[in-house]
Image (cartoon, rainbow, N blue to C red):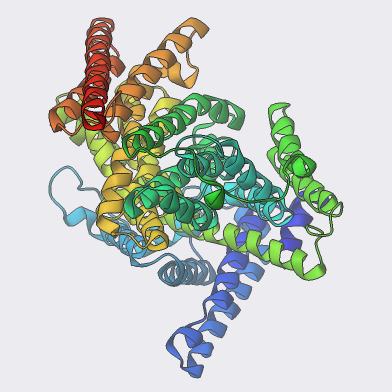
Length: 615
């Protein structure tokens, strides 16, 4: 029914948003109630009564919005009184969202919402900068379901109108063979290189990021293939898990889908999706370049040659299957040609199904069609629920003015210093990203920190990319590092060591957001010359940074001081000041020449010793 409804409003006739948005959420909640029933988890049949009660309540809610559509359309906020049914629906939806968040996402988001709800009612009793006049129960209920800032606001509207269709496309594209072609291409492109399996992980995950964007999904999809190969080729268990985690996390910053973050960002800040996806190209390329260099240097350090035949990745010939990539090529082309996002995604779904018919192995049976549809619908429900939940917090923040209060507080703490404000925002985004799904973390960070950054003169796009990146890399930031821990499970490695390795391998992702702010040319916000120069300087810095992280620069660096020097040189080069960058480049050149001749000296000494032994 969820799929039929979404296809109806996209292909047949749009429905008023006062009906379609609540119906989208109610169907998502109903689906997840059926997918995760209480009775199944707690082994008590009587708990079905609670789930049935929720399903009846959701049905009543849908009927309420259909019947009350005209009245709600002309209703005046903060003037017209709430009816008893208005109040019932508001508090029922709050209860349903909180319960489904607890079941599907966990207690972290549940607790966050509860903190905001408590603040909504006790704000007038709090002293200090976060004091406000408070809300009555009626005002709170109105904010929840009858306000554009509440549950049915912009984030959930984006889920309804865009995200559902792209997640459906991703599911069908993967099911119809396109996803496997991307993985095989990534594995084969690095087949005959030093550290091939690790590089294959990087390339495969970057390709899969175009259709998935979920770090955990990428780890489970590509990790089961790449991690065993990395271990066989000579990487340690922890290195194998860390490389896969970092590469998979990069899927969320990889255009065009960017873990659906680009779509939500576009709607929240009023910038076209194409602008955001285009701006993300150089940072994403820099991220994967950094990982690529790290894994190459690790291979050199561990003296790993091109892998033997017995540990090479085997797959069907790729060239005869390249036609299976037509759907994603067409979708991207349509988007950049100006087509609507929904239309592009639906054409992608149709093309995936048609192209699957060309091969017996990929041809969709009825059950295969149902499986792909259910995968896409479930992923869409898993996005709709946190976006609706965050709407509760957005409404409270807007009504209480807490964002403005936070702006003043951060300004006071940093005395107007931009770097201090950025560091505070970074810590806040990392904490939110560790506790919440990426979409929820981005939305909360958006309402809490973006106003502060914009008030300090940062344009909207760099400000949003700043918070988005830190929300993403929280997936590989200890002590939580969920993506790294998942990869460690596959690698049978120490989770803590894997987490810290992943953090160090992705160090460039903690630096890049500051570059967005101080040098927005990296986001294509400047002249071509400035963008090229900034990109080249960043790439040079990445090479030195990767050498420090991997512990190899022409030779193994067992001395920690050498590694620290490389990191410092990298930071100097990337620093957005001409003199500082020049100093870093000179020091880098000098250090590189020194290490080159040290390596030649070591090789010469080794050869002499070998000759002496032979003699």
